[in-house]
Image (tube, rainbow, N blue to C red; front, top):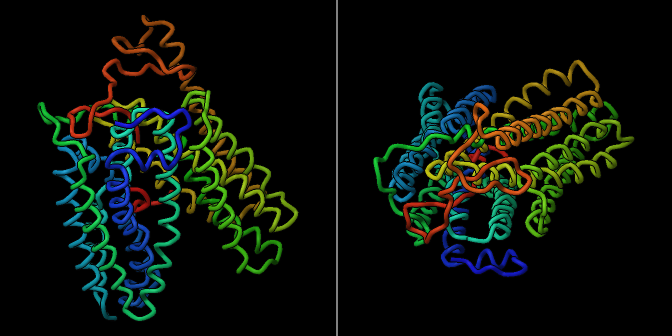
Length: 448
């Protein structure tokens, strides 16, 4: 559907037929994932009088959102987004509305709040993976697809910055539970407009059985996503530890973390603008390694503002690493498992974020911030080495078709990737049964 411009731009992405309508609608729906976290935290704390309870409720919500994302994405691969997203979003919005009702006034019972939050997370529609899979159906040129992914990633960063600000304004004149109602309305309204876009494909014909290969195809990018999420969540806590060790005002910490986010946004935009000669898999290794190499010595910074500069550089690798992980998952996934492959990557980011905060919290009380920064960077480096090792094994397997685990019946390999691409990987018009390849960090709820 798209043209093949010699120098594809972000404007060219939005000029693709139906892309602007679908992208705007899905961003409105995904904004709900930027507002729901703070709204739930404030409303549950007000209703129960306990921050510990609100933390537990958010953990339940996050766990069901993240770990049940691949099964929800599999439903989309199996039945199509038009059939699956509306009922899923309607149920999610209804449960958020019930949660708002339960937490509207102080003195609420904890058990129903926890159950409702867990069920809401289990129903959260995977809008991020769905949109990323849609980009490859809309766009033929791979450079333009990469730019579309970069635009999507930067937009998601902005959603998670603006979402809490919207809730902050809202709670100035309404109970915090109103933020939950706002999240429900955004998700349901945005999803309803999104599924009406002509860009979305119709139901897939055939047996209706989901194709295998979602996790297997996405394993290398999942490893990098997991390592990136773990490193980033650890860094957010370690910046606080660094400031405390050196007696800086902790009010400066948000500025340092803001530098990390700014670097990520700039890196994401640059990643989409550059024409890369290296393969997707090679870039994934390099971005993960770059993040690790910056973080390892970051704890030795002589002062907080030097650390902020290091965070800008580290952030410049974050969005490219995650964007490339989604791209590789899409390129290597089976035709009917692309949304699920992207969901596995998203789950890796969020699982790593949860684990990183926990581990960093334990280690920060026992080790210096310099050592902890080195360990956080080491995780990113290990993920890059793991993918590089997987690439070498895949290359040897492709070079020796008789070796166990080698692939047969496939098309030409992506240059330099060591990965054979499926022979039936074709692109067709939106609404067709076949789909071409593609799919903050956080729970989408971060990126569902």
